[in-house]
Image 1: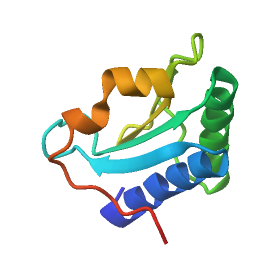
Image 2 (image 1 turned 120 degrees about the vertical axis):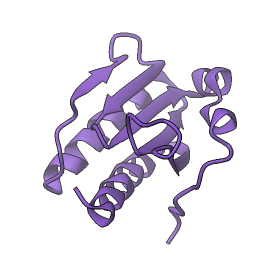
Image 3 (image 1 turned 30 degrees about the vertical axis):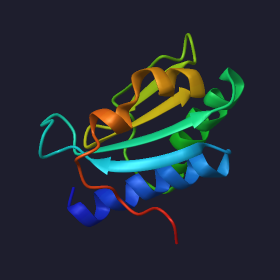
Image 4 (image 1 turned 90 degrees about the horizontal axis):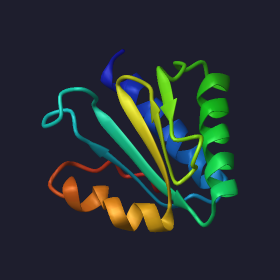
Amino acid sequence: MDDEELISWVRVASAAAEDKLGQRTDAFFVGSVLGITDWFVVTSARNHRQVRAIVDAVEEAIDRAGGPKPKRIEGRDTLSWVLMDYGFFVVHVFTEEAREHYDLERLWRDVPRLPLSA
């Protein structure tokens, strides 16, 4: 998968999250420091039902666009933090409380961000 294609999937995932009212959606490049994936997409929801809706929308949007299937999805049992592992990128969908607790943006504050606004 080339960089342009990978960034297009990150944008598809981000847009799908935003379409389901994901809050503060952010995408950042962790590949140069992490080594197991290239991009994180992080978004949050007001409640567990909305977390589920965002996860379903991201999975459907990437599939509909001809993208990869997730290698695994973790956290569907609690819906506080769902991790969707697509290999080259990972989508994190949090409740607001879980997002504040884990604060991935602070942990990865020094890595490049992908502008998501048009």
